[in-house]
Image (cartoon, rainbow, N blue to C red; front, side, top):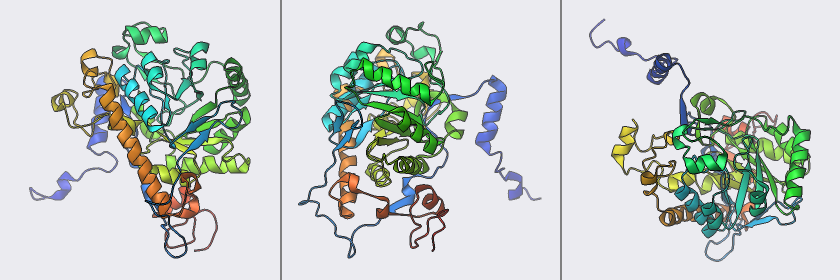
Amino acid sequence: MTEHDPRRNRLSHSFPPEVIAEIQRAADEGIYDIRGFGAKRQLPTFDDLVFLGASVSRYPLEGYREKCATDVWLGTRYAKKPIKLDVPVTIAGMSFGALGANAKEALGRAATMAGTSTTTGDGGMTEEERRASKLLVYQLLPSRYGMNPDDLRRADAIEIVIGQGAKPGGGGMLLGLKITERVAKMRTLPTGIDQRSASRHPDWTGPDDLTIKIEEVREITDWQKPIYVKIGATRTRFDVALCVKAGADVIVLDGMQGGTGATQDVFIENVGIPTLPAVREAVEALQELDMHRKVQLIVSGGIRNGADAAKALALGADAVSIGTAALIALNCNKPIHIEDYRKLGTEPGACHHCHTGRCPVGITTQDDELQKRLDPEQGARRVRNYLSTMVMEMQILARACGKSHLLNLEPEDMVALTIEAAAMAGVPLAGTRWIPGRGNSI
């Protein structure tokens, strides 16, 4: 062989450099890797779907003259006081502990300005978040951290969390360096000690027990508040049907691309199914039970822009929820404070060090000095701007399909660009009438 023979430097497909590095790290440390953010592997996304805009066979709406409504009601099944959102984009649950108080306040302010809701996350309700949020959804997780009947009544809706897209079947994690005196007091934990939440609720072992828990929460809140149930996307068709049977007003479905403050990397990359097939399975389950639009469906997990949101609605969702994207709007991974990124061994755009508490832009930290880098008012304006842009993009696409309301979008308005996306979403492959797995003709 010559000195420059390419066979000498041929990389292994099974053992590329990043796999080799992880094996060697595991051998050195003897423990699994922990990180924040969401799945980084390549997954099918809403990019693989496109809308069929109106031309001759359909009549588009004029953007500057004809209205395209955006409002949506949540909790209309049983709640005495269902929630009305001005826009069908909510802010997902991210805990105080994983996020700092300034970040939680900024998200609450942004949601209020946009006419939508935000969500507490694990660890209880902060006063800053409650004051800032016109509509606040209170999460009840397996940990029951910070849970008390008074806060349930102060919330505008209750979200019982069974699973998250980043870690369905697994519990949350919060490393000791983020458990300050305030976080510890809210969670009834010792300061500075790593916390790992339970993977299942202590109050039930199956769907019949979930029915009892939902009834208990309804009684505590005098049947006023909508009851959501949040599930990670796995056996979606069965899980959705059981949530309906248990009495949920709203189902929140979190796909594999959903983010997290901290969990095992092996969980993030290898458990759950992508959001694209999950939303179709959920909608079909609701349709089979004649409960579509009667039990509302909120879809989360990798929603990035108005096009993603519009496609989720076209597949049958009532609203979407954003988490990671909202943090990015707050400046997550922005190329500022570069030296602090490098101290973490990373660069802006690749950072997933939420679990360390050393967030360079002051979002996922409890450090007082770092938190000062995030001004709640400025952060709220950024997120509000992002939400406004998303909604305008959704309206542009809906009008192009001739729809006067975002919820009038439907699968018939879309085709898929790949066979995989066509099969997952249940829409035809572009240029054909073929939906793989449905037995229909090309």
